[in-house]
Length: 317
Image (tube, rainbow, N blue to C red; front, side, top):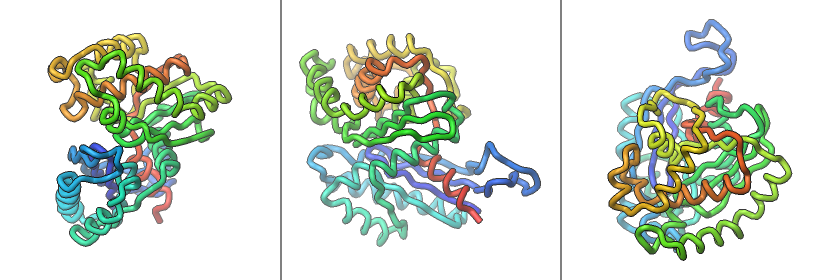
């Protein structure tokens, strides 16, 4: 069965098309297959910036609304070209919190035939967990962190077990629009963000005291940029999970937090969409490593959309 997953993120819309294999079969139907339940046929993404301008007012502005619809129209063409059997389109923070989010869902269905599921933060966290689990990155008690534009999800897990999860409206775009008022980021702006995180993440800090995660796993997004900047030779498209050097991450974070927009534009491995939001992502990641004190830092390139695919494969008949 061919399946398509659309991840309608706050910054980027992603499309992935895959052939699903039910558990217990191989790709040719002959041998048990436990490590791979789907084969990716096509993937792409479009930087829609759905949260542009007024994400903290919980409004999708007209320009972003139209960009989102145009992206879905482009995805529809690929879905039809691959003759996909089943489509799931998952909307997260920007749509679920927007006062006109339902209008966007309705317009998408009318203009593209794509039916959007608006999921809760808890559902988002669970899908992220399944995606990261499929990458093979979970080797011990770990804290998974997925920094989106509108929200950030945290999952504490061990191999084969989800222990705790939560979602917080402290995504990189929200933090940037609320606090990023200087270039480079000023000490005063940085302190305001730290104060916000300190209050917002009380529940996470309490959970980490209980479960004592020894590894931090970053799910795709900003962590792919961290990895590409630490190791420019890394081939992300061929990588499911990779161990990152914590010391090199902290050196990179220090450089990012003191850099100007113009300086970041010239940094190798940093895509244009993340030139400013990477500062917020770095500050958030460093804040979390400060109280978790992980022994290991991993990147999982598998995230929500891969988690949805993995669950679709399990349910395939």
